[in-house]
Image 1 (cartoon, rainbow, N blue to C red):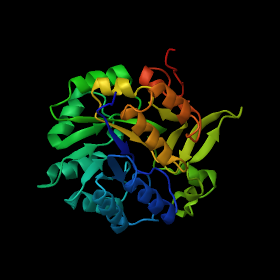
Image 2: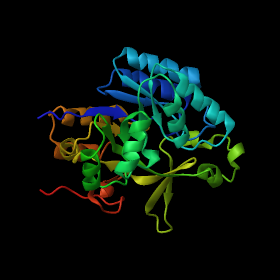
Image 3: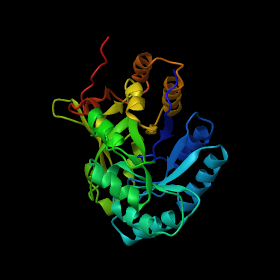
Image 4: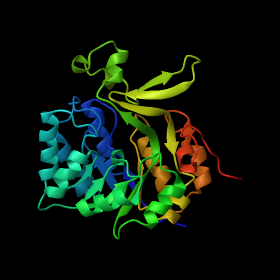
Length: 305
């Protein structure tokens, strides 16, 4: 049985060479995905692609029938960041994902343009915040990944009319953002003289404990989980809870295979339990889903036989 849920590709969290980024979105144009998020959302120093490049990619994807959403930085630190943010907000063609309250303020004040998406970094955990964002012009919100399934279902049930819900269903968990660049610190460099070393780590820089156990992943100013969050097994529960969109985060390898796997489950062509088994070979590390079950995020709670 098909699930009435759209499939989205989250914005690229890592710093990749220009050609790798262009190749990714050329593949995405032909992929079975409904919504594509574009733009730099992690670090303003990354410059392989510029603002006009992202607009060109957006037009390409729109011509292939994709809903395109332009993302904003999660951490706005400088006037240059604000100038880019104003450009993103001012363009009337595509929807915007607001990942910072500065973006929300600018989007709420504009006179025209499509409704925006409230990103996960806005940390919506209560109905009051959800109503405030809806009144500001948001028509979709992305749930913070720490939100347990039961809490999410309650929020969806009480959401303002017309407010869509999106959930991260595959990808490393974005746990924190900082003004300090941890990749640069690892390389014993200053943030402003980082030499863009994170481009050497297309899936982030793994961090282990002294005992050698996977702990976190460093991605510039962003800290991620070591394991890949996966809600493939929970897709029927997500649909039942009223979730409208599930998102997959791009990874250095096998992104198209992950999207195809999700599409097969959503279309009813593949059982969710079987898909989970296959997905383990596609992720860059172990899987986890603890947050959804109200458990520590790094845990993997397996479905009952």
